[in-house]
Each structure stands twice: as structure tokens, then as C-alpha cells.
Image: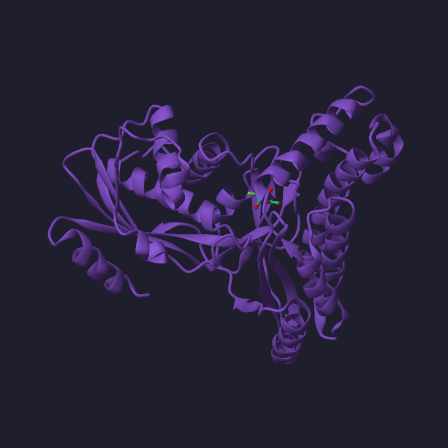
Length: 389
Ligand code: GAF
């Protein structure tokens, strides 16, 4: 949808006049480095050109008007800056409200309300960070509206994560908000989540594309299973700290893990920690491979990442495994894995140009036969981070 159309819709809903501002924040796809961001490891995500837009106008009172073109039937949801409390009934507005709450918690006073129109083209709940993009979008909107010049884009990512953890109850890491705030066209972000040091790595895929497949399944209990994994890793870390001097699982190499792993008493917990350690090392190696133009090795590491997420971390599911197995078995596919938090959502594959059509057609057909519903395919481009548009 074009900016002009969004503004026209805004005026139809809220009336004309006043200064109108528009913002955009992207979704992300993670190429490798999954479930490492709350374990002190590295991640390698990139921002997409798909994302979420906001059209905003100040109000003189403290009221907030929220309208989403993605949830049109809900109409305008009216609330106020004095009601920034999470509630089930508030649905999607819990995300922007959470960020407003987090701003105020950090001492950034929001002195007046706003009318807001939202539109997103990231499929919701598909593991491409529609919620993180909404959080970063809200952060940028507040920074610009209230002139909070001292807040950097990384601050906006951190505030988004804080609100997700403390207002919306998902104990996520920093990867998604960071990618949405800091993305760069045609680059992925090699981020050390322990120090927040990052480098942009050009993603130059000669004769290949990044293809995302949306399984269109989202298994319930995603958030609680996510929080469980995090707790398991935290317990494993405490056990390891009794025998070796590490701050995070990201401090261990594979050899170090093998040496100390018996300190982790529970075999399931040991598998979780193994994934976190090995995936971090795989990510470091994958970025090096890409820098050396060794896309083949990058793809092999993506495949290994999936295997680890499937068997050791156990965050995949039948539908996703079908997609990944089909992709990995197809000549012309360089690598394929689940992306994002898991339990459904999307896969990411690197596919040679000449294979893309067959990839979409054949995997689409077999998936429908096996699962009973269609998957969606997106041949994506890497875009910039959040911006005023
Ligand atoms: C979700 C979380 F929000 C991220 O922080 C990250 O942990 C990811 O799952 C798994 O890598 O997207």
C-alpha cells in the first residue's frame, strides 16, 4: 500500500487537518544464529523490505486512537496514556502500548496523546518479527514526535525488547528489534549479543535468492516453550559455571563444551546448551564463509543449524521439517533451515536463480498434499532499518 493511500485512510478515519507523520519499520529474517541471542552468542539477521507502517497525528488530550488495517474489523480502539496496562482484550495494541509504557519507565514523558493508523505486510505470527517491527516503529514514532534526540536506534531496539519482556511477557533476546532498527539494504548484521558490537556483512548471492516459506502453522504455547528453553539454558549455564569460568554459553567453544558438559546433570538440558554453544560457533564460521564468498559452506552450516534446532533444541515441528527436508533434497538449493523462534512459522533457504520456480512449484505442491493446506513463498530482498518515510 502506498503512503498516499495510508494517509487518505487515516483522514477518512480520524478527520482532516493537523500535521501528519509517517514511519516504517521492517520485519527480519535470520540467516543463522538461532536461539543464541539470550545465550550471549552471535546472530546473523537481516531486515526485510516487508514491514509495518504508521501514520500519526498529535492530539491535544492524553487519548490514544489505534487503528490497524490488518485488524480492520476491530475499528478504532480508544485508550489513553493513563491506561498503559497489558490486557488480553487489548490484542495487538499491547505492543505499541508496551513501548509507550517502557518510554515512561525510562523517564521519557509522553505529554500528549496521538491518533495512529497501522498497516503491515509481514504475515502475523509467522516468525518474521511482525511484533518487533511494531515495537521499533512505535519507538521511532515517539522519538520523533517528542524530540527525544538522545535516543539512538539501538536504544529503540532495547526499549522494544524491554517492553516485550516486561509488558508482553515474552522473554525474547535482542535480535529481532535490533535487526528492525539497524538493518541495512543488501547486508546482514553480524551481532554479538553479549556486547552489542556489530558489523554489517554484504550478502552478495551471485545467481541465488533468499526464499522464505511460511508454513502457515503456529503451534500454541510458543511463548511458554520459548521461555522454557531460555530457563533450561540459564540453569545449564549455572551448572557449567561451577566447573569453568564463563559468563555466557557464548563463551564456550565446541571443545570447551565437550570438556565440561558432564556438569550439566539433565540430558535434555545438556542438549539445549549444546545447541547454544555449537550454533554460536556455526554462526561465526558462516559469516566468515560468506566473507570468503563460500556460499556453499554457508549453506551447509544452515543445514547443520536446522538439524541442531530440530533434534537438540527441539523447536521445529512436523510441517517445518517437511519443508526443510524437501528443500535440502532439491538440487540447486544451497541451504535451508527454520528461522525465528520456531514451533511453526517460516523456513529460510538460499536457492539458485534457475531453481526458484521449481522450488516454489514442487515444494508448494508436495507440502499441500502432505499437510493439507498451502504454504506461502516470498522471494525476499534485504532492506534498511526503521525510518521516517
Ligand atoms: C524470537 C526471539 F524474539 C528472538 O530474540 C530470538 O531468540 C529468536 O526467537 C530465536 O533465535 O524471534
